Length: 112
Image 1 (cartoon, one colour):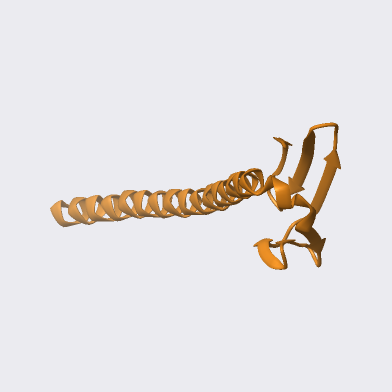
Image 2 (cartoon, helix red, strand yellow):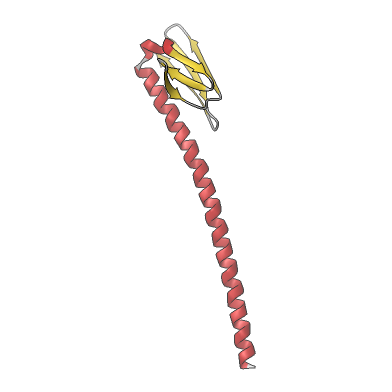
């Protein structure tokens, strides 16, 4: 009787520890996937911000911006790649630029 009770305890502990390990593994997998998607979105956001700052600093040469093959070029040099869309409009003393990447779009007004 004592041995059967000990065996039952061992089986119970193995089942509980297996459930704990399984749930921990699933939690870590989901956390890693979410972290990866957040990282990609933050990276694209940073790329957009730095591109807008670059364009603001070179606003006098804004006419050299060129969008072709889903890439944005500045003076024939690659500025951003894998764009979904690019739009620029000139107002009286400012440019409105809208750039869309896979995960986000951003619009900025750049003054001359």
